[in-house]
Each structure stands twice: as structure tokens, then as C-alpha cells.
Length: 295
Image (cartoon, rainbow, N blue to C red; front, side, top):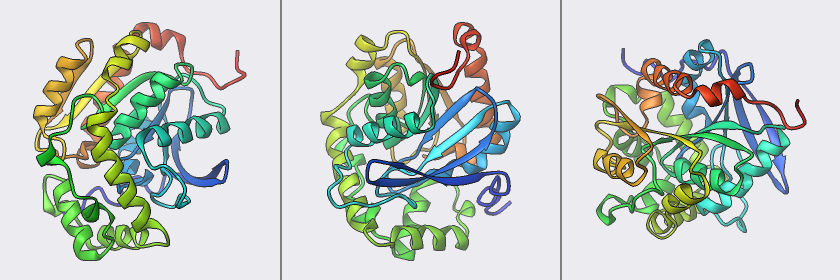
């Protein structure tokens, strides 16, 4: 069905603001319970990109929390924010503390994967497991695969449609409403400058600030799953295989006929992969996930 997943899950998700320091962001949430997934989007994207996968994940017993990174979505877009992966990781520490969460499973896609890996190394108490989806920050990004910052930051409908065509495997998934929404959000006050800074910083740090050695040295206990779209045009599947080699204890799951956003393109399969990953970790399953201050 053309555009089948754009509206999926919106009727079951709630959203609310969270303020950390002088930055206010939007949290999108669905499901309930103590099996908490924290979703971190990629550069130029936002929290609701994960919404189509939320119904299936919630049906599996997960509570799903997605967060707009500063400069993205409906979050504040301050000029003086760093917009580097490590800056986003520090901000998310504050969000998790504000929500009284620890021991969560982080799902990070692209930029969000590098942010999640940084967060996991910085704060082992906050992150128990890590799912890296078409991720940056594990192996160097090829120069030829880097997307010019001006293409990420251009909020015009034409540029947005071109970006979304690059994002997903089938153009049938790109509906006019998605283009209009993305264009309106990425053309809001401060968005162009923030997204340009974030994309430029990501291109630099996807080579200069890899988290591989830190994960191996600081978090040898961490359960890591790699998920990759077979037809990913942004971070090609070859990066997935190299990332698996760099993290020898990590499992790699390849989603067929998906691009850079497999959780959006095939939510049911993605949810099944996450549930299988959860159930394959008996020690983590027994330990569970609790709120800060819990018993």
C-alpha cells in the first residue's frame, strides 16, 4: 500500500515536553511496563520517525520513548549548542534522568547510533543494551557516502522529497503529507542552521570520534545488536559487515528490501527482531529495567 506506514501508530502515541537546562525537547511515547526502549533518530530526522514501529513493539510488552534531539523536530534550536554526537549524548543523559530511567535499551539509528554508543560508554548505569541501526561511529564513514550538510538542512519541499527518496527503498512510501510535514518542521526558526551544523559535525565525527574501542574497553558487558537495511543508500550494508567485524560479539540482522530506516519501512519485522534480541539475553531479561530510585 502506498505510504502505508506514515500514519501508523500516531493514534496510540502520546507526546510531551521535557526540559534539560535551557533546552526543551519533545518526547514521543507508546506502550507501558519496565521493558524500556529509548529511540534516537538520525540527522535531519525526529522522534516520530519511530512511531510506525511503536504498535508492534508495544504489543510485545515494550515501553517506547523517542526523543527529538536539539535542533531537530520540535526541540529547541539554540545557536550555541555543539550539535556533535557527544553533545547530543550529554543532553540525553539529562532527558533520561528527568524521566527517572536507567538500564534502558537504546535504539539508535545513523547519527543516533553514534550518540547511543557514546551515551552507553559515558553512563553505563543508564544503558543496559544497544541496538545500532545503519549506524555511524563504529567504522569510518567513506567520504563518498557522506551527505553534504546543505542537502540535510534544506527544508524546501523539493529537497525534502529528494532526501526521503534517498532514505527509503521504495518511493511509494513517500506521501505528500510526509513531505509537507518534514518541510514545515525543517524550515522552522533556527532549523536550517542547526541541521547544517549537525550534519557537518557528523561527517567529521563519523571518522574522528569512533566509539568502537570505547565500547570494547569500557562496556565489554554490553549486549549489542546491529540492524541494517539491505538497500541502505546512506550507510551501505558493507558498513554493517565491517561494523560486525569491529564488534565481534555483536549480532548483525539484515532487513531485506529496506533502506536507511528499516523500522519505518517494515515495522513488524523490526519489532520481531527487537523482541528476539531481548529474549536472547537471559541475564538482562532476569534483571529487568527499573526507574531511578526503584528497588
